[in-house]
Length: 438
Picture 1 (cartoon, rainbow, N blue to C red):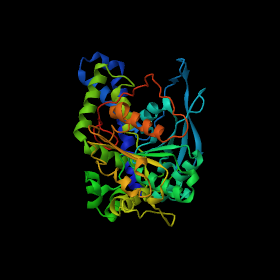
Picture 2: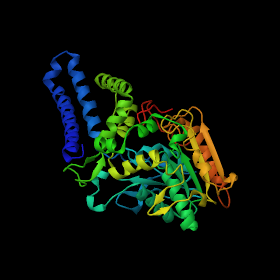
Picture 3: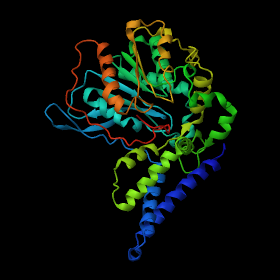
């Protein structure tokens, strides 16, 4: 598998399917076919349209496309993503709300690097923008990064986070979602020890595998079952000649997507069949629920091989975070050095990716942090997606996180907006891991 030919074969298969879809859609649109009263023609066009769109989305980075938000007088304020810090493997992006003064709450969302772009947190950003200045880590697709840029593993990821936190200053509130939770905790501990004045004010860890062994899931079982040699042989490929990162060893996004889809193949099949029928009937639209969900779900990115392999080996197999033995750039991180940063964990009662118990384990590692600065919450009916982007997040978790931030802020408490925030619409389809959101 570790050859360019394997990567290019997958890209060739994707390209071929997109071409077949476009061909079917175009052929069915010939005027002469309108004279044939056969529903197979419209079904061929529908299959072509859905197929072409689906396979084309796999190599496209989605736009943030955040709608304007209203000020207290009801006037629209344009939201523009702006790069604050630019680095080879990821940028720090700020959502600039034009015409609005700086907000008391400043929130950094640490986006997961687990196969999808940071735009997966679009609805999370939208829900927080009316009440805070929001920043996000925008990780780059490894296929577009030249080999000359060097490596990027979990230690580099952690150092990126310390740089971002240092840039934003101590009045910062960090929210790490899923995969980056253990590394964000490590970055905070590193700052607490080496640059206490740069550490954030609060840290919220949402559904992250701090201690994967605390509660077994299919993900942790898989990590235990396979060897590192098997993973490297079966999952790692070299970027093909089409992209700027040609020759870089990666865990390809298309391979990840195949894994995601296989976990809920029947559900995805029903969703695509239903969409084909809607297209054939003329009831589908460019931005309907199906397209909104799958335009994001199918847009996948390559991970560097060293990041993927070091995550499995050191976080899941070696349990370096859970054992407080994590080393960054030759220095062993000590979570006991965190003494001033208020830490809250959030878990979903029905999360089968990072099951309840995995994330709250962080609090036991914080031996130097007073109990009054620790908090935890379990949303009983929430799955993995629901704890940061679904209805459970909007109704229950988001208000609790903002209250936690306010309770640990200095000076006057920010006033919560009473007007309604835009409610993102999500199709009840599997999330980025192939599981149904709640």
